[in-house]
Amino acid sequence: MSQFAEPEKTTAEVRVLTEVERAWLAGVIDSEGSVFISKVNPRKIRYRRGFFYRPELSVANSDPRLLARVRELIGKGYYGRDKSNQNPIWKDKWQYKGSGTVLRRVLPQILPYLTVKRAVAEAMLRYLEFVDKNPLDGPKRPPHGYDEELDGLYRAVKNLNMRGRAVTPLNEVTSRSWGPKHRGRGGRATKCRSLAEAEKAWLAGVIDGEGSIFLSKVMNRKTRRGFFYLPTITVSNTNRDFLVRVAQIIGEGTVCLAKRGGDRERPRWMYMASSGVIRAIVPQIMPYLIVKKERASLMLQFLEFLDGNPIYGKGPVSPEYYERLDAMYHAIKKLNQKGKGAGIL
Image (cartoon, rainbow, N blue to C red; front, side, top):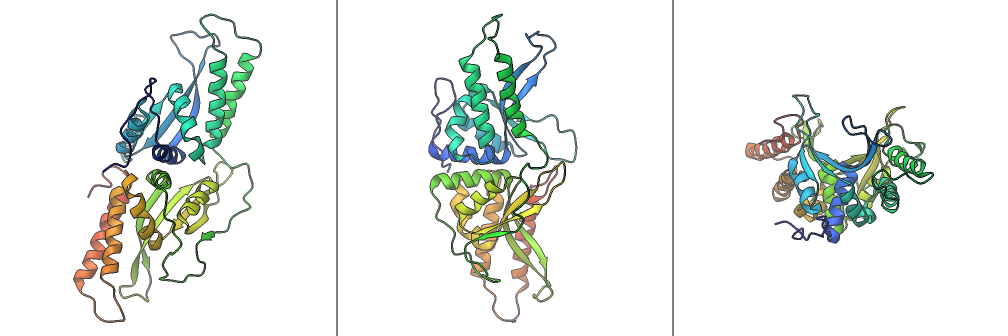
């Protein structure tokens, strides 16, 4: 059953969101969203400057269910297949788009929950406030300095959206853990938090967008089969503060540098945790998951099977035990595969 409230529309058709809905939407936009201004040069219609600025909100994902939920919660805008994807191997990409009206109504509601997109959201609101306070009707001549101020606000939003190497130096390249240190192999995470509903919703939105729930096949000659399955949950982003927030909300896990980057690429950071965090956190966020719900459910079944069928010592293990483990491993792996046709069991 959905944990979101029934739609309650405003006169502008953009909904007034509940706290839980604001948190979830902020998590999705932080991970999969873009807040930007397009510079449009129309061919058929002539504008005073030959172009105009169009503020937009975009959310993209390969699962249309996520975009449908975004559209349902906001109450305005549209979503559809992104036709720019021409590679026959890639999954179809879907996209939600909202206009300035959506941005005016939605950004103030979700701003307290944003991390990655907070600065660009604040810059967008300054742009929209300026436009609203200085309307130009018909052929009206703009006041002195109007175009310069508008261009400056446009560039502020554009600069915050620019890709490439981060401006700040990489001075934090070591991992940092939350919870007990030096727990040792087999130790359980014991400091995971009991999340508030808004935290559950935000974290679910983040994991649906930037998260992964998977089993790694780790080779180890000391184990019975020469390998073991390692349950893992990760969240990846170029914004370290965003992942620190993930770790602080959960209470356990590690934030580390995953990719150093280069002149045209920002460093990429990763939050990582294993089975203890999955056992404690995934059941809490399950009602809010959309894209990752099925693999999260399979992972919990995998862990439940391990907990219900412990193996001690070096005695024999039935073939059925390993067959069950292997089947769940392949099912989760299938859901995590990329490309067309992937994720179908």
